[in-house]
Image 1 (cartoon, one colour):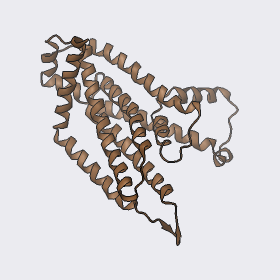
Image 2 (tube, rainbow, N blue to C red):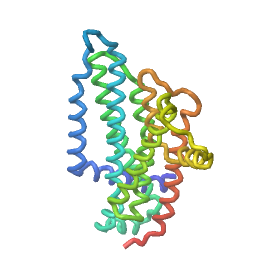
Image 3 (cartoon, helix red, strand yellow):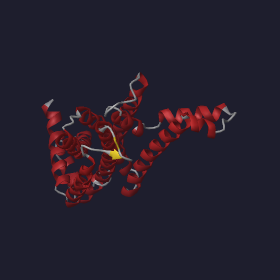
Image 4 (tube, rainbow, N blue to C red):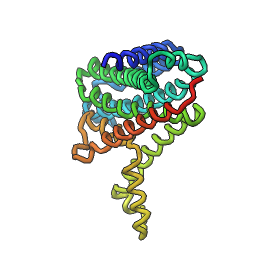
Length: 278
């Protein structure tokens, strides 16, 4: 077991340190942290609208959820940006051929890259969410342990983004692989938004029901089989404050995105095994 894990750990450690040393990563982290700190004024003990004092806990829940979604989306963008150039940079610098000339299998090399990028993205997101947690704790003495648990649940989305971007980067230019994963995420959020509107009372009044059941069934199949990035994030955010998702089907997005990540990982291992190492 140690012979299998040691190469993976070493590759992951090298990749992690190499990415952290990048000036662009440091600048991006500092900018994001400062942007979050600008919202500390929202964590005030008094909220007054039209002369009426609002419930501080309810307002903090709204602000915290908004920041939660912003950070989660930003972390996915970062994960895609980091992943889209990893293989190409290693190949251009000769690092790929150097590593694989040693007793390291191709799947170990890929597993090390996935582990490093995923862990780095999770730490990035968790630290930023931790800043929000600390602001609520310091300013209002409100402890939100579910906030950090929700952050960890969103790590499933980051795993999917890392694996999908790495896979696409083997088949298309770097920027196209980034845009492809971004498009998948946008469609996921758009589909959930359309479904939410269609299920509302106003949506039912505005929408005209089609007589074609085939179109409806195709739409349902595509909706439930599409990567549930938005659903996973919504489920995680529902743990913050007063959650609204507590039935069994609420867990489907977590299962969906995990299955997609595992399938794409298997395809990535196979696809990289067919690559020519120069």
